[in-house]
Length: 395
Length: 110
Image 1 (cartoon, rainbow over the protein chains, first blue to last red):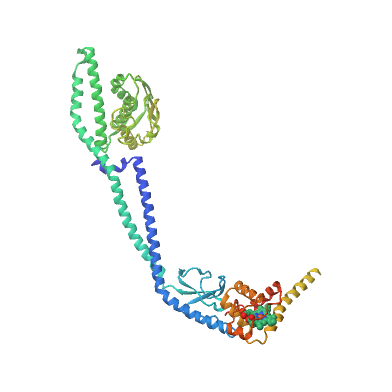
Image 2: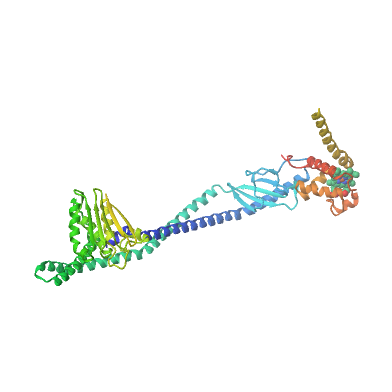
């Protein structure tokens, strides 16, 4: 359940990319749909208006042409252009040159049949006889008051409703898209939680019983075998700690104190001593004195343990581990297999393992990064294939 | 001096063009029952733009025919077809230009 609550913080880079592309695509589609709907709606409203006005415009035009005919025949006596309060008009010759105009617009589209512009409806008719040389007659009447305003108002209303619906659909699509991701993560978390629970008791039983055996009383070969059992149990115990930390206790309050790092590192090196010995790994320590951090001791231990256990796990036989502590940084470097460059950006992600030949859940570095984030420590990782990996913490 | 000469020359030319229409066309048409203005409006009615009107007029003046006349056949029958113009192309163009300018509708409507 914990995992469900904080699933968003666990989204991987690739998942985020999928999400972003999904959102972009969806936004694009949404706006496309909206634009088309708007254009279609506007066009249909305009067509409706034209249908309503076409008849009256046609009648007015015929009247106007009759006036023009009259004027044509009596031009020697009267040269007053026919005007009417119901409309404005203009006439053009066959080369589209304006002969006379009372229109508001001074550029008329004579190829159109009827159209709307700046609050006016224009109606164009070609004359059968070119009275006064006029081949085209354009009539202009005002569109009904606030027609455009009303259309835009409705457009925004319907557009807004469609937009909201699309947003809601988008939200559910997003949930649908995320569901498999969430399920995978929560399944693993739950599985680990259940498993760890069952691991706790047996591991502790083994470890405490080995400790109780007095090694001095045993012969060398048996001693060796017992050591191996101890190492194996410690590995399990470490893993157990990591898992419980991740699933259960990283939300628990921290008990910060002044931690002397050199002492802690030496203690942890001692803890991993047997493990290192089993792979014949040598160590080089460059530890400055008096370096302290105010941090939860358990969490700092977790960081060091994880880095060390990685350095051991991914190291080669007879390899080397270099631990360097300065007043502002701690770095742990191994001479191991290294990490492919393409996988570097994902190493801090949960359940990501850069080397599948070695066991593990891929949570070690995730824990390191979680703790580092909590304390504002900067983690950087550099690696070269077959040469080794170096993890640095700085503060 | 040269300027003055040139001015007088162009003035004379324009005067001559004007008088060409006045003397040549108007003088012959004077007294006809259908005025040149009426003819003009019949051309407008059929050809609309300046270019079209001029083209049609030019063609008719050069080669008057009953089929291309804008007069009704019965009128043509009564009046008869005019003779092809005696003006050369340039003179005819100038005369027709004047004819257009005098009778055009552009700028006259109120």
